[in-house]
Image (cartoon, rainbow, N blue to C red; front, side, top):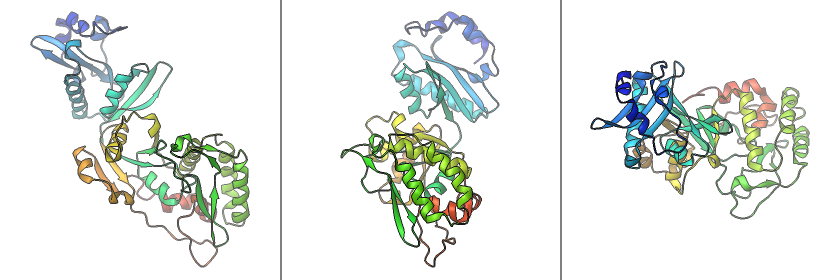
Length: 370
């Protein structure tokens, strides 16, 4: 959009938002010079009247920033805003940008929902504004409940993702891997269980840990069965510190903190989100998964667990423009100190037996990006 185009009708551009409370953009804002502003910005016209605009500029070599986006009051909720935003996204893609950022007032819940529907996800913010970001390149997203100290396959799938979504608003299931995992008790699988209190129908995020001393108890159990493992000493040094820093109270928050800390140690650099933080409306089933994936921002490749092939409809994902793939994980065997290998144990088993570097190199790093 040429600068002269705005300058010639500057009063009309300012008037597009005349009915918006606390609107602050003036003629100076529209005409201010910014990097690549006139190549990136777009306007919508009705005859010779501007009825909408998207004002952008270059923030970094890879990122365009949407400074101001508006549609005239008499044309809102008629699809013009969606068409204009999609045109801006296509223009940024054509010009070689990898992502678009913007800021939106925390109080503007409708605007946040609008941007989420178009692939923007919250990336930060302060007291008054949320920063949102949309990738313009396909990103791999995977979704899983926040399990307790999960097995190697959980982290292997995470390592192939750009975004990992903790499904913390799903219904809690008793006697599942959400609050327990198996370890090796001298050749016999033994459950390591986080004691919890909950009511039937509670979401995972509502489940509370019922014993304040559970961390010490679990560390004592791990020491009992792994003290003689080859890498116990080096792993114990940092693992006990992680346990000491886990938050009190909620099971989901504690599990997520433990998983993220382990992921950081393993060199997994994906971005973490929580489903409870995303506005998904009343969608269920595949529609809910699609809404979750879109909330991750931009073009999406969905890395599903293999079991998802039993109930997911590939046609729905294809219609939504989402590439559906399935995770294949072959559990590696390593020396556990006894004849019969026990697969599916907590990642703690591999860490204590073969150490952090070999766990990361052999079970996580290969295929770290789909």
